Each structure stands twice: as structure tokens, then as C-alpha cells.
Length: 148
Length: 145
Image (cartoon, rainbow over the protein chains, first blue to last red):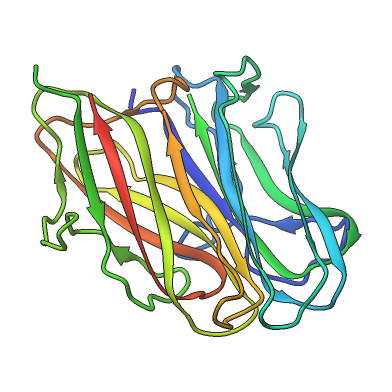
């Protein structure tokens, strides 16, 4: 049993609109790895940890703000769909000389008694969204899911 | 049993492109230490902590996420760990300050990472997606128990 399995998925930076899914099929080398296949390992039954970050690489306008969100969909997730709210980010300006921000999060789901049940051998897709507000510009995310 | 062993690896600051590995082979004195040899009396990485930094911002309006990848025969499979995102509107002096540090008590979270005694683990860092922030580097401490 080689797990826990630390599996990551990232999105390519894009100006994905508010309330529209941005798919996250990539590994850190930008190779498309597609949906996550839950390891077919008898020891695996849950997503025990979720962490990572989001970034904005091109700010499009003054006075923008939104909330970053993760959605898991597929038969690899026992509930079919799981939605996770991560963090909000707001900016008054797109002018130089004003702002540096970071978004990082670590959710020890099992430790908190809320591990997400997963289904061995099946798959689930990972996508991100900016939820409500005004689109911040070109953005992307990278998350790690620990399956045990 | 003299462990736990707190072993660190750092990268040399470089303008490594997005989605390209930046090798983390140095100790804290910038001496090349290469891959980590897993101590012969332990079985897991129980904590990962460290930070990333940007030492020269190349342009306005940049952003990416930082990532750690462990490979080699010291880990059963490639293990990927996303750390956090960093975004900047500015490269103007005196304008923005950010911290990108992390501390993950894996064993406490019930997700200790199994390792193989006596074998080697290569550590590399990535900017994952977005626009490269400039010249950057990282340092990570792994606790082996």
C-alpha cells in the first residue's frame, strides 16, 4: 500500500468569467493529466486533505473582486458533486505600485472529521470558479488532494 | 533511534519559467547536497514546512502558484504538493509585501507520507500556471520519523 497519494491538478491561466467553470486537468509541468483516477488500492476510501492556492496573473480593471471555489464532479466522488469555497480576493486598483496578495489554503479534512468519501478505481474531474462579484482578470489555481 | 530528522533543501534563486522544475538541491549554506537520502530507521515524512520568495519582480501584473514535487526511489510514487498562490499588480519599489510560508503537520492530519529507507528523494519546485513572477526560490524542511 503506497498511499497516502498526493495528487495535484492545476488549471491553465485564463480570463474565465464569473460563475463559469475553469477546468483543472494539468500536472505541475502543464501536462494534461485529465480527471483524477482514485487509486485502486484497498486502503483508499477518502480525500483526507485539500490544499493549494490561486493566483491572478493579469488584473483587468480597477475595482474588482470575487471568491475562488473548487468543484469535484464524477463517479469517483461518492456524493457525485462536492463544492468547496476557498477564499475571496478584492482589489481597488490595477495601477502599478499598489498591491501584492497571496491565496493559499490547507484543509485537513480527515483531521477535522469531514473527509470526502471517494470510490476506488473511478474518476472525478476538478474545476475551479470565481463566484459572484467582478472577474479579477486572468487567473488560475493549483490544488493537492491527498487520497487515503 | 536518533530521529526525528529535520532535513531541508533549498533552491538557488533563478528566473525559472512557469511549469518548469527548479531543482532544490542545496542546504542552508548553498552547499549542493543533492537528493535526500532517507534515514535507515524511519518510515514517513511527518511534516513539511517552508516558504517561497520572489527576489526580483520582473513586471507588473503577474501571478502564479508554488508547488513541490518529490520523485525518486525514496517515495513509492511521485508526490505533488501545491502550496499557495501569489499575485502582484506591481513591481514598484516600496509598494507591496507578501509572505508565502506554510507548515503542514502531515502526521497530525493523518496523511504522513510513506518513504523507503535508505533510498533517495529528489526535491523540485514549480511555478504552476499563470505568469512568472520573476526570480524566485524556495526552502522546505521535511521531518522524517
